[in-house]
Image (tube, rainbow, N blue to C red):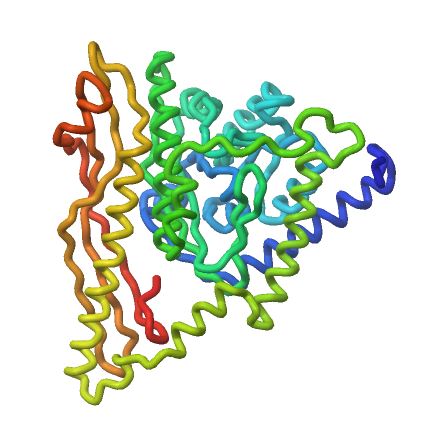
Length: 412
């Protein structure tokens, strides 16, 4: 049976208190995490010029959304359930308006609310796989919004050097206090007003790929192991949550997730402050090992050691990217192309350049890695035939990654 009856004064008090607690926890995360932005120059310039945009996040990467937004006013659609009201109250102090609705309930009213907010001058924030998934599978609503408003859609994600990933349908990633959070903004998607149905589907799939790519790059930047990164590199349908069918006498998904969120945040903060987090312990053990760079007797020896350690680090980094490319090939979404098939995937050039600057002991060493990210296409009579062909490069982007040497290891 329910402990709090819907519509009662107890429920109203719970919503008010819960919204306040969530807001405080979010503020604590904002104050205690270090943030870095990759590929965000164009988006930030639009914010400065007060040009409206649509920002798209996966549901599992929404917790840090308020800190990625740098515009004046934003509006997001939220569910009509009680957990939706909790989240709404937590977001309002950040200057984020909330309209009620979702793809499963009140969708038309929610879309009208978003369009009205856009006309009032708000940027829009959307969650293409919300509110119930499937995980990392984009719905077409955001493309329809972009068609009506003519606003560009920016796929945004984040990764955290230390965090907790819940075993919920969306794999919600909650950074730990004092973690380094890297936001990645991928290429925007622009939708013409006279777009056809086939083109709408192509753009929806493109948004899905770019959100997955942004999540992958953010996770790699955070140093997350490849098996964890792989969850976000291709569309994944998560397991059906308990209680998704008959909800009578059970907690709703939102209530369950909200309870887990509050509990995890409090536990995570405590573990971090007392130093018992397994991830933190791992970082400390690496730092405590003898550091050949710090043992160098001269600046010349120090520079040589830094160059050697960074070159080894870059080789490991590129190995991870090659493994990521192999994974991307195995998960190509093949499309019919005349009598054959065609598929696209993201790969990486094997050549790279790495340099180290600020090698003096009084300065923090900075390493720069430059490589090319490739968009590749395979065509053939069948999937096997296409995979046997040499891929065609249809787009290439030069990527520059910057690292600093901290306590014996190279980090973002």
